[in-house]
Image (cartoon, rainbow, N blue to C red; front, side, top):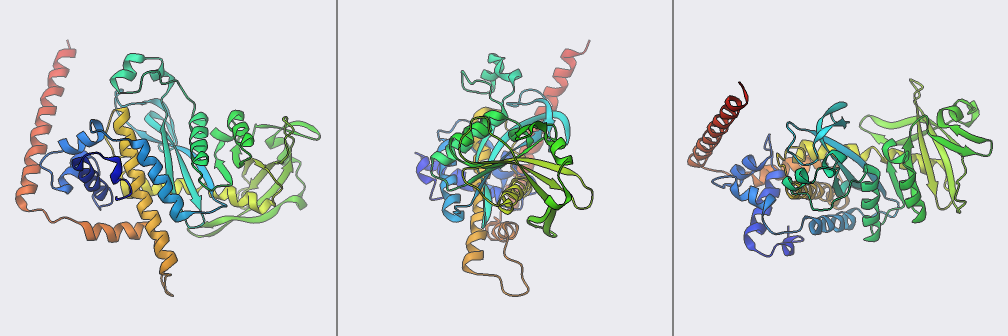
Length: 413
């Protein structure tokens, strides 16, 4: 917390943000302003809500501090910057950025809020270092709606690949050591993102759809058409990295492709085949200099670390439990959740480096760090505090019920 203390001009928000982050690291079953305020010993959630909404501090500056903190502890010249989006299912229409849209979290079209994240994935660990809220056209084309949610005036619509490209550029401009970028089909099928990375001479392994078109010496073909022509001898059995149940072995093949710009470098289509089901996956790859296929496979396997980051951030920290509606509040909550998760990742990495696990124990994980830390910081509030909060919740819920009943009576004939 001392690393970000200078971002707060007053001592009150500095102390409150420490209590909020401690609450995120706790073992509370649900994490929002109400539960975090009660955990911190506050009489009401007003202080936590003020911190996220009206207090004066810059979430982007703390985001930069998080990036520096993560790079300092996980620094790896072969690191991969992984981009992906995650969605939170929401009710109503007032929460910033919400609309009916596909979200992988639910696996279907839902009323949801979607954000794009950038993860620094290194050999010693992985953590989110940037975030961007996706604001659909249904919002950017409705200025009054944007204004009511606190979205800055003049915010233009940006696609998910555009948001991802900005975050990658921000990380590279800040000096984050990383040779590669990885992402799924949303980003691989986007030519503008690929071109931006090629301009920077940054390698990428980006998933593409089976109908994605590439140019080869024999002409232009869809990825699935090229895969059908791969001879048996061209497939190699390689691991995409260790998973929870061991090495993740697949069959892999590589097809050289051409780049229309004619820049120096290596372009290829990487094809992955499931050894059990035969299912195919495709990756468009670029490297400023030639690399073996095993290196491309390693980078492709790194893409899954962002899913692990989402799982840990939501399961341990409560990234998706914010219950905030406005632009500023969302960015502040997401940033502080990233800070809490980065603490777990970097602490676990330092423990593994300085105190290797003895025989019979697995290396310490972020989950175990969170469990130990939650035990150490668990507050011991008296019965009067618990009863005050019970009274506050029941009074607030009664007020909310009266408002709902009054609204229902007004809209029904």
